[in-house]
Length: 460
Image (cartoon, rainbow, N blue to C red; front, top):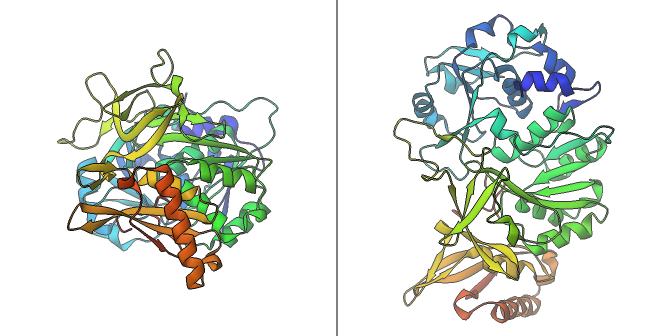
């Protein structure tokens, strides 16, 4: 398999680049040279925190450190300064690599190495010394950060080799590559020697789309919330990808159909993956959920079963475990990871209901918000929705929905708003049991998403 630099050197092509919003980096240059200079040897065999201000800096740090450092901790962009000391202690950090001055790092008492543009030639003997551990933060982490331990082999386990003679690929993603979903796309690009266009959280959507279009993006990835945000801008015409990929959230039929309408020439696929369980599977038939036969198959790279309604996965792509001496077990005695994602079998297909810890309790009856959202999102006037609990003195909670319309002007007049609300509620009551139907619908200009690109349910 080799370390990341070795694999990049084997695949890199002249002209292939990583494109940031204001900078670019040649893959050939990245494979052959180091930006650490004399500091490189001081990081050998150490546990290193990679905390960068840019995604392109993060990509460089990962190539620099894999095979050199014993352990790499990939800091996401929203890692709070107040948690740095705990991360250092939990992961046993011995040094930090960054791409810019960072005052928060000064008080850690650790050597800080600053990346420069790659210039120092790296020989084969300087690469691949160790099978580095890659530590990533779990999605949805609140309060004290939780990290899982991966290997490069596990992280790239779902990536298929690029076919000989295949057309050049230019990857793009709405994810940040310092999170699992974005890292998967970065590794796909680097190990195939493909160009990649990196996002920026502070970049306006239209400017990002212009960059994607100008640089010829062919493959584009994001969460369903990312894609709905793009569709709400009305600017999808600025790009023409040949492959559209969704992951990170439930891909309901409404968003799949909307993307097919927006990009009729593109293949539309959705993948199931999590930071803990790794990449489980991909679905490319244009339908929500996944085929029944995916569960219970033996002998493949991924085994899945359903217990108590939750999806369990056993795979060499999964994390090795949580970081920290007192960390809980990641997998059960048989090696299965409980994903916490609830599924049900209907008409020969497994469909996602929602997260086990996200259930709304209506008078003792369970409601998965995602199930209700899928119904609301099928309404032709709706672009996206967020279902949440509303306190009730009688039932404890009621179902409430915030709805973002495809055309906000459709609900400007009070009469039109009332009619549209009644239409959405009627659709819900026709498709759902009474306790699952929203008690109220509120029209909103947009829905908040987390730094990872998912609907922000905690503050909905």
